[in-house]
Length: 154
Image (tube, rainbow, N blue to C red):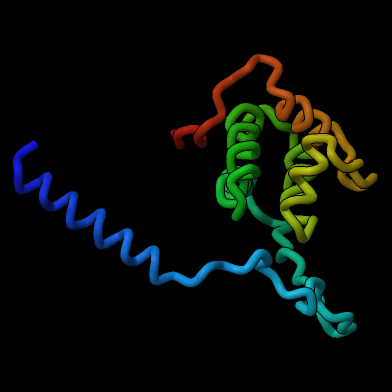
């Protein structure tokens, strides 16, 4: 390291220390006790249902489910569902594909899917089928497979 780099680091550190001194102490709470946590009980408020795709060709449906399994909006489900679909989707029967489609597009909250798959919460009857059982088994990762990233698209 040359002398210019050393001088630059010293100036940067001194500048950062002066910035930290100018920040007021943060309060112990980072929330407001009067904040509304749940949405208001508005009877006109509904969560839109996914559009019906009755005549969707099977290969297009598989491609859609593959995409939807990879783009969930939360990393936990992205990793869990993308590795699950990469492993099982091509082997699924049409009935299993229907069940999986309803599973990932039915609940309005992705955390529900995660909690059901990890057995944190009981699975509702309409989602308790062989695909969910397979997902729960996949979630246990009994073969200790690395699932730190989504599988490559082929």
